[in-house]
Structure formats: structure tokens, C-alpha cells
Image 1 (cartoon, rainbow, N blue to C red):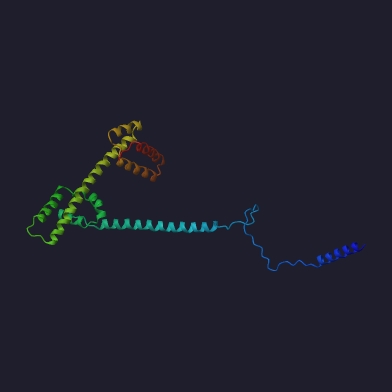
Image 2 (cartoon, rainbow, N blue to C red):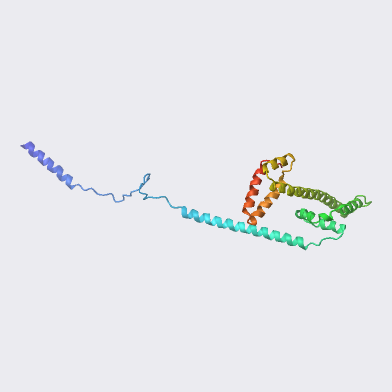
Length: 243
């Protein structure tokens, strides 16, 4: 009986302490999400950077367009400047004046002036130039001015001789290219014609360049069918062409 009473008292005391105990929530409890590797609902999405990227691309495109426009404007202005400069030059009448004309020509304009003045660059002109060079070379007493003049005329003579030879060769190739292109365009059997031209070494870059010009002109004139046909010919020519 005493034992039973003691057990009841002990149990009652224990329960009394249990119910009197208070569980207090921590005051400064901060919940942190360290990592989320699974988000099937798409609640926590990655930052959307597409709009920023599109804006950056647009700005870069506009900048490139402005740069391209500025470059094209510069090219047009340069062409106009050169055209005006060429038209403003007075064509010389004599061989002596023609020598001075070429001495005053800029290096990048020499080829153009040789083409324009080719009929004047004849035997008479080169004899005059050779005569002036002879006087300077065999002069008894030479000044610095004469030495400089001699160097200039020697350089001019070489440039004009090489330039006229190159121009004449180009003109001959152009004439042959026109003839050969007509042969191809009027051929009943293009493949056979090309093979024959390969044997005669008639397929070259001059012919290809002329064909390219005709293709561009055909497209410009809205002759699409003719342009496409010539493009097919171009593809066939590239199989056999030699440099």
C-alpha cells in the first residue's frame, strides 16, 4: 500500500513538472535556403536576361549599320573627289607637256592615266623622253636639280613602259575573252566547246571576269533567266579554268 502511494506521488510530481515546462520559440531564428535543385513548378526561375541581350544586340547592330553607312559615304565621297580631279586636269598637247603631266600624276592614278592617254604614249613620245634622259645623263656639269630630274624621268620611263605593256596585254586578253565568251554562249554543246578551249588554253581569268560582268549586268537589267544560265556556265568553266 505504501509502495503504491509512493508511485502515485512520484508520477503526479513528474506530470506536474512536465506540464509546467514551457517550450519557447527562439527569438532570432532565420531560415536560409542554401540550394534548390528541383523546382518542377518553375516557381524559382533564373533571372531573365533575354531582354537585355536583345537590347545590346540591337544597339550593336545600329552601331554597325552607322559604321557601314559612314564607310560607304566615305567611299562615295572619295570616288567623287577622284572623278572631279580627273575631269579638272588639262590634257596636254605636246610630248614635253605630257611628260610633266605624268610627273604630276599621283601613283594610284597612273594606271587610269595610262589607259586614258594610251594613244599619246606612242613612239614619238618615248623618243622624246629618251632624248631628254640622254641629255641629262651625258651633261658635262650636273646640278643637284638635274640629278633629281634624271631620277624622276628614269622612274617615269620604266613605269610608263611597263604600264603600256600591261595595258596592251589586258586589251588583247579582253578582245579574246569577248570572242571566246561568244563562242561558249552560241555553242550547241558547251561541254565539248569548253574541252576544246582547254586544249587551246583559252580558258583564263580574263574570260571569267568578263562573264562575271555579264552576269551582273543581266541581273541589273532584270534578265534573271539569262543570268542564271551564265552562272551555270561559270560553274562549268571553273572545272577547267587555268590561272
